[in-house]
Length: 143
Length: 359
Ligand code: HEM
Ligand code: FES
Image (cartoon, rainbow over all chains, first blue to last red):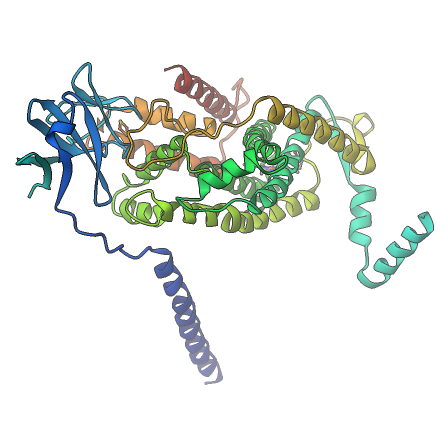
């Protein structure tokens, strides 16, 4: 009988102890996990005037928090692609001489449609839509 | 003078009983043999860690974390603060030497089999210290917020994301968000100057206590010598003074490097600029990085990178548990399997590191 009481009390203590530890750990782990930042939902972006943009050049746009590479491939012709390399997240650049998109981190290459053609990138770059509204370049997220 | 210090010691002794300290100073001895040099490697590592603590605290007085202030504050330290450049260079060089000597220390312990019973836990705590040393290096690398570090951190933390299930949450936890931003910098700063020093000091204390309790490991050959052939020197003052001499030598090398090979600051990180050429991790991560590069995109059914990360994780775990791995030692074996494993590890690290720089 006596032993049983001890067992019971020990169990109670154990449960209380575990509860106590959980109630300490849980807030700490939650604290460490960063809150989802209220990212301004960007769906389209004005990227300047068509006439100001030389052919066969590129620039990186701030699409919300994501980098997007905008390339002028010909007269009034544009391509916009996600600039985050699908390999390990470096930012890609446009190679004027070969007309390809290149990632300097591990020598990844994409073609102008964003298809991964050589090196480690496992997936193509996400494509964005580009329209000319009057003379203004407008980049829009697809889908 | 002597009188005063004697009085002081007596005063403490009466109250706190200094017998353990006296025992250590009077009785600890260090075996002398062909491989005695390796006994100094742990001490050098310890010395460099103290240099890190000291210079790190100094840098803390001027460093300001943050996307708009980190780079600027480091530039301020190296251009405006008197001897700021020296303190920064010493901290950077000492970090690299520290990792270097920790590796030398670890492999010397490995090849002399000092990890065997009863020193298993000395090995395990040592390994944990090494992992934290690498974490110090990784988190510190980002703090100046320059291009090179920014992209290296992007790559380094993105690799974590390849792990199934836990990968993404772990990546967000490390980065303090989806991307490498000012939030990542704050996080790495906290890790580098508060979390790691606290945990590191704990395991370092254990490591040192274990060593003091057990004394120096004696290699097989030495142990089998007849008693009168075994040579020892007292730990105090002989060995301690030799230690000190070596520390002075290392200190001079450190200052030489800091004076003549200043650490570059580079360009400020820009989250919206293409990665420049020559993005690479610090040299002590190079062998892992290079091995990952050699893996094909897919191995059977899993991604090459995932395979690499899991493989390195498992190898690390086995390495940590080396003292518990028992392999029967056959008489007719010329070399022991574990020794061969160690040689393979050293050669692998060496070759991969070199390839990382020339390819
Ligand atoms: C910051 C890192 C480290 C510091 C400051 C440090 C410090 C020391 C010191 C002062 C000694 C005594 C002198 C010596 O034997 O060299 C020692 C011994 C030892 N260390 Fe470390 N150590 C570090 C990392 C490591 C690592 C990475 C390992 C292995 C995984 C390790 C395993 C050992 C072992 C097994 C001994 C006992 C060897 C003996 O008794 O001769 N240590 N350490
Ligand atoms: S991050 Fe672009 S190729 Fe590796």
